Image 1 (cartoon, rainbow, N blue to C red):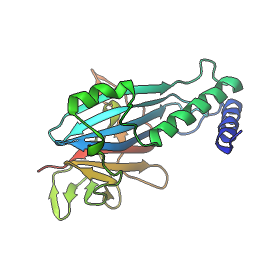
Image 2: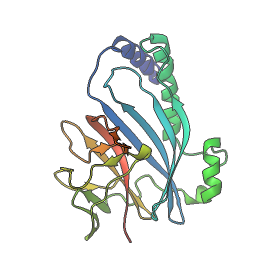
Image 3: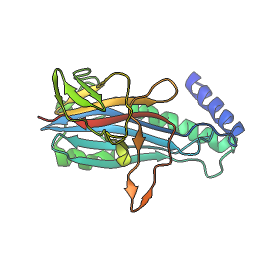
Length: 236
């Protein structure tokens, strides 16, 4: 048994033992750039939200995202590692953690351009992405900064941007946001698309994210802790 699998099994048992406990609610979004072509950028996505702050395995969704500097935005699901049907069952929790380990390994691994997943094939045909369009995960890092006051590329600054990420979560309106003590540097910039990592907890106060209002009902549950990678389009 590998060390990684032993760790996953231990986490599964721990999750089962603490299924009834609660902590802060959390939101986590990861964006991993894969390719850029004709102004469009392709990302892998990883999304999970724990609204109740429960200490148990929570559903994790993986997918694909294409964003372009003209405002285009297209999300496509890939795979979901679902919360066990019987939360608290050590066996089912262990199985879920093991499946998540495999999904995370795929998320981190280089894309197999010769045999891409079926869920990605349609986007590759639509946008024409190939291995030749592959980009470094840290391309352009640090060349753009974000704050509630401005979006800056070098010394050229424009109006503030509400960051956007999967499932339509967005950073607070500019008038409501307290914002970080200093501007956040982009982790990736390419084709006019800038990606920022926002941490909001006891130690960090980057952008705070909310869900869209549906009718007159605001779905935002007041998530307490964020670790969210999100996007701003850099004006040209």
